[in-house]
Amino acid sequence: MALRDGIVARNHKGVEAHLAHAGVRVVRGSARLTGPRSVRVERARIDHAPGAPSDHETGAPSDLAPGVHDFVARRGLVLATGSRPRVLPGLVPDGRRVVTSDDALFAPGLPASVLVLGGGAIGVQYASFHRSMGAEVTLVEAADRIVPLEDADVSRHLARGLKKRGIDVQAGARLLDAAVRDDAVRARVRSARGEIRTLTVERLLVAVGREPVTDGLDLAAAGLAADARGFVAPADWSRLETAVDGVHVVGDLLPPPSLGLAHASFAEGLSVAEVPAGAASAPVDCAAVPRVTYSAPQTRGRRPERDGGMRAWARGARGHEVRVGTRWSSTPCR
Image 1 (cartoon, one colour):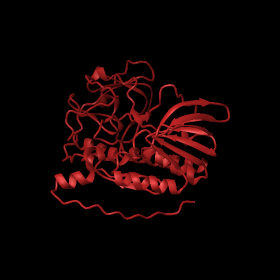
Image 2 (cartoon, one colour):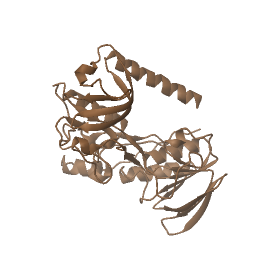
Image 3 (tube, rainbow, N blue to C red):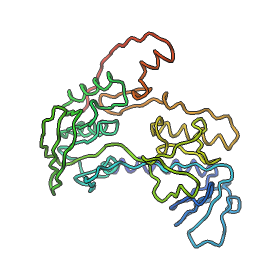
């Protein structure tokens, strides 16, 4: 834990140093939109970097309450409020026995047994990690295969590799209920064959995806609205610009086909930053963004299966005859 915290702190300070060197003023606080390009920040603490714009330049009035600042984005406003783990109705994380993928980073100790609910990239990574730490792991995925965004061949080989490591992979299975006790979690799982199993584990890790964070943002004040899943869709995907002129969306706020991956969000941020700067901006090709599941074995992929996968792209877009070859290798995990 101490090693992890130290690495995170150093990286955080490094990013802050880069921002200060570039003359970026960082305003820390709780923000909400007050107009198409205006933002009010409460409980604000402002880091004044050399070369950063003044309050006058950003339109911040001086007659507001202490700690409250208004800002006007004259050239562009970027919404990048990120995401949080999804939770299931009736299954309340407590940070100890029932944890989200975020909680798991700070949960006390390592469990001897864990049930990972969700077989996407996040769930598979946590299942692999806990197995490497010596835990008994059960991985439950509602879809008919794990990492369903990947090609079916990749899913099959990954499941085989995880099973060889002793992970109980249950695809096409569902959690029926879970009873949380002081010392364990008792969960009932229905398998793809309809069989009901009762598992007793030290920890239940919920990794069923993430959802955009727009709470308190007041999108309506800027003339915007989130869809039923909480995403804010751009009107122009090439510029990631919404229907409101000069307001852009990046990262986890974007709906599919965006994947919400860190390196993709970084590219989106660069693309959007070039727009108000008047520089040539290359759009991000979401379907070409590489994805990696950091497990053992690992997976890498492009072109999500929901878009037909690499085979359909090669066959349709390129007119190639497609042949599938398999090369399997594994690295022992200790």
